[in-house]
Length: 620
Image (cartoon, rainbow, N blue to C red; front, side, top):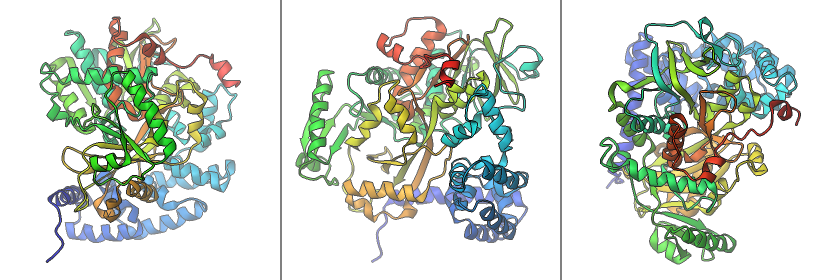
């Protein structure tokens, strides 16, 4: 008798195969070849570039067709790329940006590689192009000159770029740029400089940049708060294309710094989620967001960690939360698949919940759309620049297609891209380092046959260190230089698949999934769930997203100092889902000039962290 394969595993494999088949069929049509002819070329391409296999679902058919058109030419360019970048992982570079191997980008690669080699060591060049392959398609000298200008001429531009390759996005001039070829400066005052008007121009009250969970929740909060308000939501991609779509969906309190302003923010925000799921919003039901009241279990593997759980349990109880301490044996009885040493312990918080981030974003969008003509969704349309009225108030957003005038305000909720966008638009280098992309990987897979179901959310206690940084702390600043952090988390989705995490890594805006990190996550997870050692790599799908890490230690939700009409809501890192309703409530309070429902300490903690003038900042 053959091996029995679960229906869940079959369904996951079928979905991946079906979607890949659709991409391949579209690429075959784009190439003008028959499906069989295209498949033959594609297989030759995948032999050269096996790392593309996991990227097929994210590639445009046009790009895939162009790459498969001439496999021998691609092979020659990979060889040449290796010669141009002797110390680099060429597979990672080409995999991170396959379009580098095609015109017009390929024509710019030799000059960019030479310019980088003049300014950096071989090892530094390898690090830069692995983090941001797009550097090879840019005028490196122009990028560094613009960084120097943003820094007032007194910064080490080359050093800044090495420390954070993602700064490229605040100055780049390529086809994928957030900026136009006009100089990045303070918002232009009205008129022609703000961009040509078109028939598609919009007049709204509030324009929100970014359709992640923060932007979507803010749009709905504004639409609900004032029945006359008109709201536009812009995003250069589709909704939920960033960190939210790659997340595990926790709405947890157990792992947070109990008693801190950010803990109180999370507690208030989770309560607001329950308000959102009331019958008054028919699109937002518990079923629609896959709400699961599964509870959370923090796992301690040592006596020292167990002692820390005792203190945490007491602190949670003081906040009115029904936390329970469990011995290792009790934890194993609660979760039979779990392995935990006898000196270990666990903390159970039954009130913790989880949702599906993607499903929640889709439900929020439907709820916004239910407000009819008051809501405008502009997806696939990024903000090119901001512009100001003659009074100096920022009231316009120029996209590639239209101008959006916002009478009450503009909200920057671009997640990990918020800082670079603001640095460019305001010519203020401090914003470039305020929010940094921190790549996170999450693995989805069917449960191994015979493994008892994971019925709670599981998390090793070391994960709590990511939530114990006070705003403005030096520890928060130091985390920018860390390597890859692997911490075990596990939960079961509403559809029955296992979600296993997770990693944290400062890798610029790279959205690939390095195999060594996938392996490290699975190795760590098998330490707690030994049955996972039997999972095959082909049964694992990977979600990757850039968490918006805040160097100040917590998110910023406030008006931008000195810039009337502009607000920022960013830096939530892995807590966007949890904190979205409270963030939206505070943004609405600012824009509508109404009192916020949040505690005063919380509101103060969320204000813009820049206490120095730019001159003092640059002289540090």
